[in-house]
Image: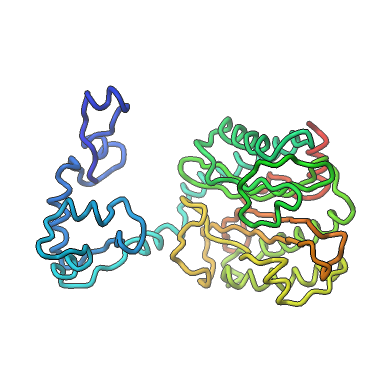
Length: 361
């Protein structure tokens, strides 16, 4: 590791540094050096037979192309990749994919941290449900979730949350979070804290006034049934991938909607009512291991999200009583050999539990 050296003058203004010796002691680095030596190391490294790195040209990197150009004498080469190709005997190979392969199966220690992360966020959701009222705004609910996560040990929220009341939930990535919440509407909240660098990612949908209407109950139960059925598939024994679970979720969703009066085609379901994937990998990033395809079979100690949703636009192709309603229910699951472990199980999602929680503010 290359790190800034200890410097009393700089630390007076910016706070303490780990320093070269501290990196070995705290982070167990085999070797550590003053970062002033990095340019020479980089130049020598590029002469190696095997170079594994992520190109700063192709994706964002701490080491940008302009920075690299300044650090290394590129001679007549005007481009970073041209220089590397001219100096290395083999093509540059990507590094991040190798690291992601190491990250996708979690250790027991990682799972323990993710249990803590999920539990913190689940408790924050309970407090947020109890507190929600038509007198508050989405921004205030956001602040409540942030406060409750931090007070229980999260360092930050893992991502900018979605706090979408009423028709705002029809936008998948609504993050304005600035509208007044209205009596009779649902609020869809996609939020999670980060604990010891591990993210949680929960979505719950609940009534602003604490009571579901009958149409809201029917649509909510349809999504919940799909959520619970898909969670059961998060096992190595099921021999299925996230893509496979998504296919199951679309079939089940169509069946559930048919029971409550929807006469919708598969195209309308997948393009309008349920346009996103059922889940993704979770870990140090919210969308963890993003270069690894979701077609691989789930293995024990992978951690994934399961998040079916329904978003009914103001369109008379769909039953009027459900129009303008958005519902998503998302849990974080450790893939087990024969049974999944739900990290977010303590966040209420049954209708009776949500209404009980909302009534006890």
